[in-house]
Length: 316
Image (tube, rainbow, N blue to C red):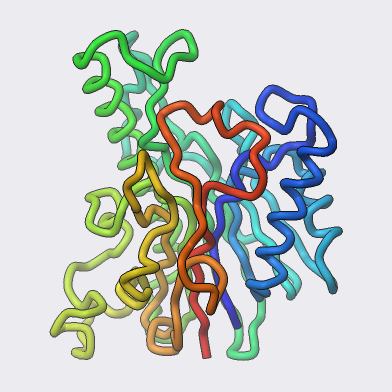
């Protein structure tokens, strides 16, 4: 099966402040998304930035066959949330945005206000594949694209930029810690025998501290000498499949002209050894055709398709 993640970028019906301005633009966006999904043909896909649940229904209505969906009940202030599209029925295991009990709230702005929950909920489901039960969590962590008081996307000065960059990092780290706690629940200390994946838009790259939080015990990463050496940590680890993606495709977004891989799939010990291929975009398509995004997301309002590429693995 093909397991993937894709940020659909502002999937709203037309007319609202974040969606396309008219039906024609909306139909164009849906058609572009549907074309990619048809070519990708995932068995299970985690999605981000679903604004209107009805819009996801409109999208699946353009796809062939039967699709099952699940959406988080914890959207952010703009109304976007995570969810799943699946060829097989889904059972929701968890839908939460609460930090672990021992993790304190973090500062979010210059006023000193604190937050004790993730900006967007984490959704975990179970489905049954040909290899047996598969547990998957989808996430959309705090963005590196900064916003400032008064709905600004540009700072008054570099001191403000630095502070708000720190606030975003505090929050993304706390959210990564919360996601890791959910992963621990899904693994149940049995990653050698249990198929588990954690995926989504993590809003940072492979070696970022926030991404590394999700891996669990250190050592044994793909491409290292320890990968093929079993140890006690294997039951608790998650492996980021990024090293399996061909180097020229190892990005999922272009930020101010710079390629970056911020969408990730992490898998348990039992699952990582059955991965036969990994990639971004549509398998076999070659060079990704992505727009370059800047600091103001409003510039992409109503644009067709998405500013992210899907990230996927094929599992035998």
